[in-house]
Length: 225
Image (tube, rainbow, N blue to C red; front, side, top):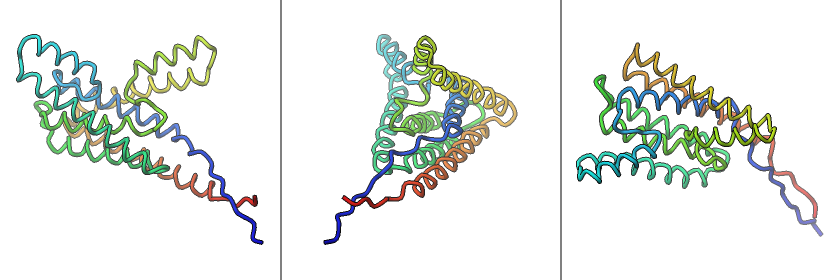
């Protein structure tokens, strides 16, 4: 009688540290560009937008509320869709999410003007950042530096040096991204958004290589019962 054969699967391999660092570079770069070109509408952090909604409501300024709600809605809708797609793509989650983010940033670039980002540009960037936060199913968000610093502080207090180093690397990567974007923005204006697109494409290539290598290493191995 032919023995029943079982298969064994290994847990998904983590996203390469280089690709993860790129995510924080992208976050820092995007945040810096938004602060330089859209001070009233934030595309990365929804806390500020939500506070502004309350302020405008208190003043009865409905015209000021609607753009903020559009940005928040774009972020929330995009992050929900990205999570839904990511849950169905297994090893290709990070690659798919980064490519979608790059596509949305490219859309934002196509509507950007030198004088300042239009509402369409900010909405597209907000959707991109909502998407980016779903690159990993294990991370609550890759653009939320405050939470990362809190976790780093806990790790430092507990003597968990590796976790502490990881948190500090994220902080440095975000600063680096903001610095690079600022220099590029001074020289190339709205074309600096293309740097963000290029960084995301590089990240997608890294995660693609990671997924292919993992797939080859974890081919189903038959086990006799």
